[in-house]
Image 1 (tube, rainbow, N blue to C red):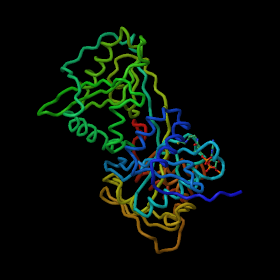
Image 2 (cartoon, rainbow, N blue to C red):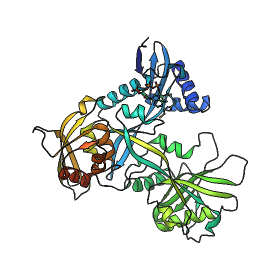
Image 3 (tube, rainbow, N blue to C red):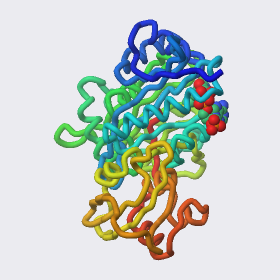
Image 4 (cartoon, rainbow, N blue to C red):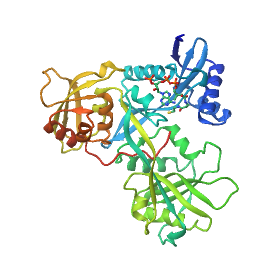
Length: 398
Ligand SMILES: CC(C)(COP(=O)(O)OP(=O)(O)OC[C@H]1O[C@@H](n2cnc3c(N)ncnc32)[C@H](O)[C@@H]1OP(=O)(O)O)[C@@H](O)C(=O)NCCC(=O)NCCS
């Protein structure tokens, strides 16, 4: 029997508790912490109902995604969960489609998420658009690192602005990094299982912060342990050395320092010895929600001047489908409806391929080799000049 599904906000405490049960079960997280999380994010939660029963839901984080030096409005999707007894009947797929339609109507440019399955989100129009790189530095062989500068303990309240200023300045230059909202900052400072979170700051000139690190230790009461870094940012190589020196001074009982960063991570570049393990901890997906907003809000290389002729398919958000003219000049782009017939230089692709291209994760040439984009060599080359970027990364998890 096909069940009728409805979508909407949390209306009652019973709705919230029902979804908290699904979240706890899906993600193996204590029920109480799911209740607190949903209370804190209540206005951004969508539930799916079968009849009067809440059978699942998700949370939307309204934030930004830095691309081309600018913050693009990005709704991050977290905690997609459906009751085990209601799975396999299209509830998650319909919930995603309904959520995306609302985002499109609101003019949101893009949406991102960390998937547990590519299939579900691929069907909704998301595509792999970047990685989350993990660095694991063995501390035993590091020796003592000499570095200048005095670290002091981080104060979450009084240092909040200084941290945000440093983070935002560095993140703006990193394709794929989040323009964090309050919830993402909360995740930096609070461990989900309530572990103690430690932090140090390297003060700079004029009250600025030149570097900081926020971390937890491994399982409570056990040593040796790892330094599990929740956030680390450095303004210059001297600050990177100072943070590395802190790690090395913990080496009698700390086995590894583990952090997340870009491929050309500034701490990695400051490590004086071989042996850091680099891995892809997670892969993230992006969906272009509104073509016009996605091009208007992203930054582009200042030297790139181009006219791209696109023909898109989008079976979930038909408002994106069809012909578009993308004019790129002086670091800006504008998408408008194309009025000429498609020609040999028209690039034909699905909205998924545009997602991978948009962040610079896959080049137009690579997508053409994968038969996800069709177009002339000249058009592919032009697209690659426009979207050229360092490999996108996203150190934050949500
Ligand atoms: C993943 C989850 C949300 C799917 O919910 P669901 O309502 O059963 O999914 P749907 O019936 O709407 O399936 C939609 C599509 O996703 C795919 N899909 C669903 N469950 C899947 C699974 N376990 N593995 C791979 N693909 C899956 C199906 O291929 C389906 O597409 P199709 O109908 O075109 O074949 C659900 O299994 C769940 O809550 N899991 C635990 C939590 C979790 O992993 N959440 C995702 C966090 S990113």
